[in-house]
Length: 294
Image (cartoon, rainbow, N blue to C red; front, side, top):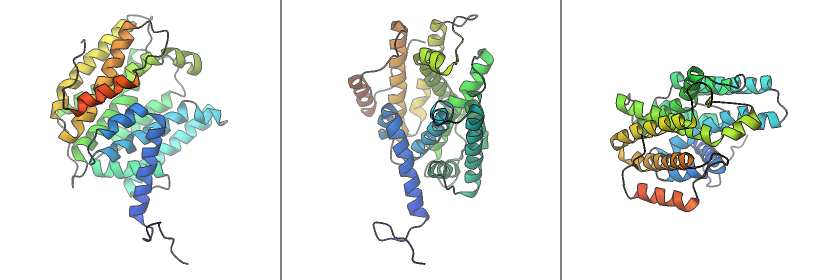
């Protein structure tokens, strides 16, 4: 049987498959998030493809529980089974170094190079699974959910920042770990506030419990700003080819927090594209993260 050839005339092989998987991950991110794509472009070439693969897997898992799977006719139980299969395939691919699922394959390559293991992967899928069974969260379940859905994603990115291109992964410094977790938590809580009405009306979910007990919109914003401030203090200690992108992402969510605090909450808060561009330019020029009200 003759071997298939690439357009460049080279025999197909693992290198070509790896490139196709990385390109597939980049396409997923470009389709789903212009803001994230912008921040990714500020990363250096060393960490950039790996961060894209992390977020591509996260996005695919999120879509299983947030609508497309159910819109395709799956029941919640069937969507849960698909999510279980994705987790199983992801963990297996990290062990063996290959998956027939291009997004999983790309993520597994990143995980193996950068030291992302089951201790970070399993909590993420546990939080995604919660979306199929829990509609209202209290303080404890909110914290567990945010850890799995956002903080571990920040920790995965930190593993990339510290280890991409290195022959052997190392453990990041504790203060960087804390910064990554708090930045991820701030991002998630901002999104919860932005999507408050949509989550309630379309998905039947309440992540924040605003109005019950001591939780108020103001208290959530105070927590967000405290997390953003703590995370900002650690950004100067990140590798140089990561700082601009993390600063841009931090400043975008600081701007969202500011707009959420000053708005009525009746419409989904957005940052206009010209403002996004200014924040990205500011980060590119090497300015430190913006100060936030903490």
